[in-house]
Amino acid sequence: MDKSKQIAINRREATLKKLGFWNIDHCEGLPLIGDYKLCKSESQICKRFIASLFSSMLACDYMQDRDFYETDGKKITEQAIVEFGLKNYLFPDEKKVLEECDERVAVNVSWTIECSYLLAWVLGLISTEEMEAPCNLPDGSHGLFKFVQPFHDFEDFKASCNLRQSSEIMDMFDLYYNYHWACVDNRLNPDTNCGELNEEVVMERRKALEWLICKDKNWDSISLDT
Image (cartoon, rainbow, N blue to C red; front, side, top):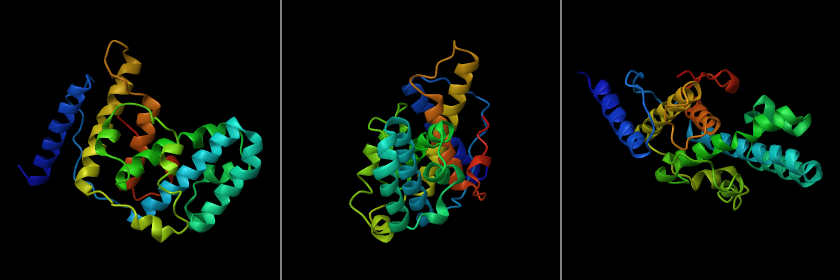
């Protein structure tokens, strides 16, 4: 057996132990996660984290406080885009939140806070234990904003991060791949057990993991097959 196959088997065994701890069902035949390589640089990951964080915060402002959205919300977001050099890193719906937002766009973009949460882990800002726990983000965007708030320069923020090893990221990838399968299985067959997992939360976090290993920069084309 080659080394990469053994690593994938060991990774899956570790994942299954965690699923057992959380009382979450698994699929014996689910394909193993291979030896993928990160296709995004630390700078790209940092910019995506900041972009999705501020965009999701503004989307929530649109839904919860339209007056704040039109004034301070837009001002804060536009300032962040300039300070952190995000203009060319915004996805189409994130641009729409600033320019021509509607309820559909706001709802879609608000969910990217979960992508920010995953990327915060990738950047070493939150613990593995917190990332593995099958629950919702407790403090919403405010819990992540504290990591960016002290900075007004991209390089200063980047210096505060500690990018995790590829092996750690692949371990988390395998876990969320299995989490997603359990959620889909439970949706199709309610007698199965997915513990406290929320399928939408899991999908958004898995999407961020897929983005890390995907050469295609089109966020909307990322596949989330189970």
